[in-house]
Length: 55
Image 1: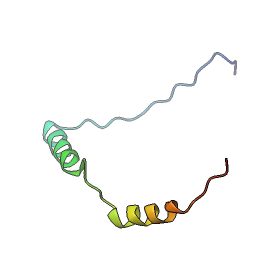
Image 2 (image 1 turned 90 degrees about the vertical axis):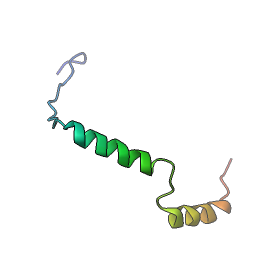
Image 3 (image 1 turned 180 degrees about the vertical axis):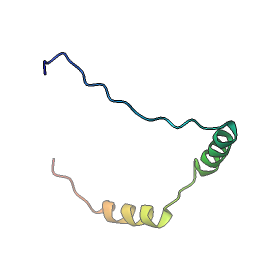
Image 4 (image 1 turned 60 degrees about the horizontal axis):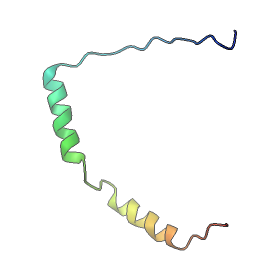
């Protein structure tokens, strides 16, 4: 292949109905802004407090 040529790939797109789009947007609105994995976030904060990065 030459440098300037691009490979085009075909992607299969499944069309969504309007009802499905509404349900997905409703779920996204409910999830947005919530901390889903609060225990893991707290554990990560505790472990990262004492990390010293070499500079």
